[in-house]
Image (cartoon, rainbow, N blue to C red; front, side, top):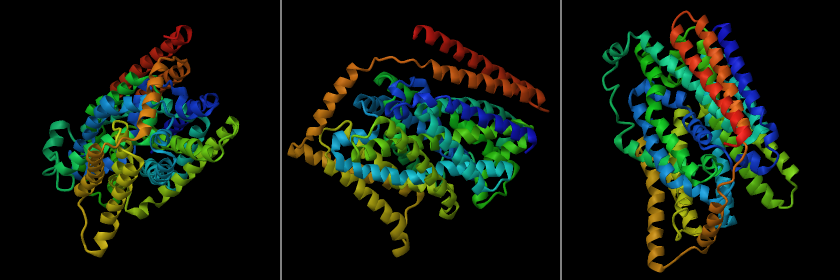
Amino acid sequence: MENLDFITIGIFTLGILLAGVSFSKSGKNMKSFFAAGGQVPWWISGLSLFMGFFSAGTFVVWGSIAYSYGWVAITIQSAMCLAGFGVGFFIAPRWRATGVMTAAEYISRRLGVKVQKMYTYLFLLISMFTTGSFLYPVAKIVEVSTGFPLQGCILLLGGISILYVTVGGLWAVVVTDVLQFVILTAAVLIVVPLSFREVGGVSAFIEKVPEGFLSLFNDEYSVLFIIAFCFYNLFFLGGNWSYVQRYTTVKNKKDARKVGWLFGALYLVSPLLWMLPPMIYRIINPELSGLADEGAYLLMCKQALPTGLLGLMLGGMIFATASSLNGTLNISAGVFTNDIYRRIFPFTAEGKLMKIARFSTIGFGILAIVVALLIPLMGGIVNVVISVAALTGVPLYLPIIWTLFSKRQTAVSVMTATLVSLGLNAIFKFITPYTCGFSFTRAEEMATGVVFPIIILLCWEVYAFIKGIEDPNHQACRLIEKHTEEQEEKTADNSQSLRVIGIGIGASGFLIMVLGVMADSGQLLVCSIGSVLIAVGGFCMRKAKKYKKTGL
């Protein structure tokens, strides 16, 4: 990397920090800090959901798979499109109707405090691994690009995320997510055509790929894996507590639907753009092996992009990938403060609660840093992300989603489904391979993680129907939902978020145009994208000014 690349990264880092810190005054109470006052525009929430979901290692985890296996990485990611539409049609509006600030709050109402405590502790335990798995890819990207030590990258980037999430709360998370989406999209639209140029164009790429590289499936990522992965993503996207936050913080159920639909629409087109660079790099350098293939994406960028534009791509990837960490930090701190600390000390003043919220954000950030430092000892990021997903995703989230629709599920049935499924998954993952030599393939591991809780919940549903069992808490929750629907149409002043987004997009466009003028190739492409961003930024700022005056 050249000095200009480091300058570009520094400018992006400063810009993201300023954008996040600009919302320091918005986090005056629990609802504003953890739920943004319940008035996040649906398109901001949808883009934030997209960034938080796709960036949990897209460039490192799925980039590694794209380099090694080819088109199957696009097939895997395209499964998330169906999950997004499913969540938009069915699950997101039901979450918004509950009127809760966190998923833990809903569990307490619907299933009782004991169940809420169990799920809270499980969520926070698993979050330590997921936040670490979000931080590690960011640091890996920086290490590959700059040559800086991996441990130092983890410490630096973890500290940056902790800073602006602690100061700005959820508003800082969702607004910076939008800026990261715009910057990263611009960077990818530049790197893809320049990468094809390195191998002589699209037709030359197709001629040079290894046999089976463009196949939709392979032995490890089979049709069974993809089907199970679709269901897994439906339940994970619909039930993960940090994603639930995106549905509960918009204005009404209609907007909650739009959040899911926007996510699905983006995943119709994005997997192809995201996965092409590491696939192209396989043609340029087929010799990467072991954990080295985790850096294929950045290696392609280093070869294809001129000076300065590599810093643009790296800056976008750093903060886009960090968005998953930021969202999980915010919701983990929210769960701890709202659903653990406030239950133990119910008469705590709002000011002290806000101090606890910020200190707990710092604490969970430090835990994420520790886990990220340990990931190389766990077999690499691909093994950690996919195994944790298969073992815990559906057992932890599906039973709670089920209660949004069923009046027959009780505290006993839900806890049984979760604990039995987690136990069985753990046995087949950690015990049977070493005691009797039996282990699941990756597809079987994902499928069983989905099937176990479904079978248990269906069996209880049939039993409860025959016995006429209904959970009395369900009716109480329905009454709260009706009251929430009557309060849906409140409006709020979101002009600050639009103004910050507009300034950030416009400034990014200007920087990209400057880099385009200085580039030794691809000037027209880069300058065109920069000019589009300047226009979009100006539109957002005009919209913010109008919104401030009229509220429309």
